[in-house]
Amino acid sequence: MKSAEHLAGHYLTTDRGVTAPRGFLAAGVHAGLKRKRKDVALIVSQTPAVAAGTFTTNQVKAAPVVLSAEHLKAGQARAIVANSGNANACNGERGYADARRMAEYTAELLGIRTEEVLVASTGVIGLPLPMDKVEAGIRSACQALSPSGGDDAAEAILTTDTRTKQAAVEFDVDGVPVRIGGMAKGSGMIHPNMATMLAFLTTDAAADPVFLQEALTRAVDETFNMISVDGDTSTNDMVLMLANGQADNPTVMSGSPAAERFSAALRALCLYLAKEIVRDGEGATKLVEIAVCGAPSTAAARTIARSISASNLVKTAIFGQDANWGRILAAAGYAGVPFEPEKVTIYLGDVRVAERGSALAFDEEAAARALGEKEVRITVDLGAGDYAATAWTCDMTYDYVKINASYRT
Image 1: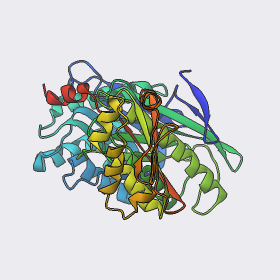
Image 2: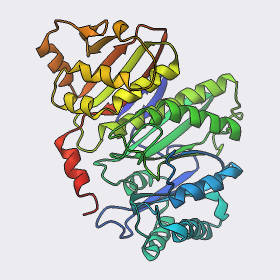
Image 3: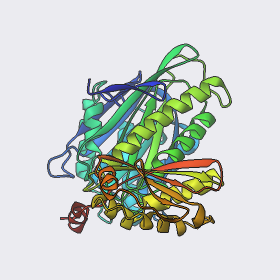
């Protein structure tokens, strides 16, 4: 077992991901889209499943995003097929036809309907998919499906990531043990309202389709939509979830105590995966938590937290361990939310560096030490209300430029 902990009242483990819930198989294979690493992933529910999803807000949407959104209208799915190394974005009619072929071919091999297959791609934009390699990979993945295939599937969706990101939570619903498993990828092109990230979630809980979509949307809004690595929002990102009911629990419906427990567990899992994406940000050395409190509304707190998390000046200062709190206040100021700067207090870790919008005589060495930790916490108290929100980002380093200056080569 890689690690296990009690998280938000739920037992979380990282030794299994999407195959932790009952009735799910997975596989990851190398099809040649990338030089050496696995590049085709497949997740399959052995029985019919309720499905939900959220997608990129970018106006330029990759073909798999368009196709999967169409297939999700029925609220059901059995399989998720994904490739890395090629985004299948900005390829016109051919791109959509190739995404459709991925679904058709997967369905044919699994003996299910095309509309029960959701498709995802990630990688370089503007290159047609080499469908001979993709189809060969899908064949291999179908043959390799296994209850222990989650590790391989998690590896097959990576791009510039340095490690896999997967976990599962276990909890009770009406006295019945249920599990939610998940895997994600993302390292760069990460910004609020989702980014170059894919996340696939599975559960053996029985859940009402409307409730599942509501719960997923809320969880994504509070976790994946609150992370930023570099301020870029992708064409391909999506979060997909399948619920097959194999736990035999009473169906979880909106408004019930079971719904609250399920939603809390789902949020805990999504938050873990979201923070893992930030930890693995391209060139990153630190996970940074931006806590905004004293806000007039939750929306205001969220907007300001996200503005600070996306500031390259803030992120580079954190990398250099420079307690340049003025950059933090400036990023809050251009978020578009009215507040009174004269009421703002800022902390770096436990070190108060500004009060009433002005500098304090603080311990520079203590502040630098706080910024030198692997996990950095910045607190901004607006002094204007009782609402709060948290965003997560990473520092911006020299390596970020190196990675993205030669992404295609």
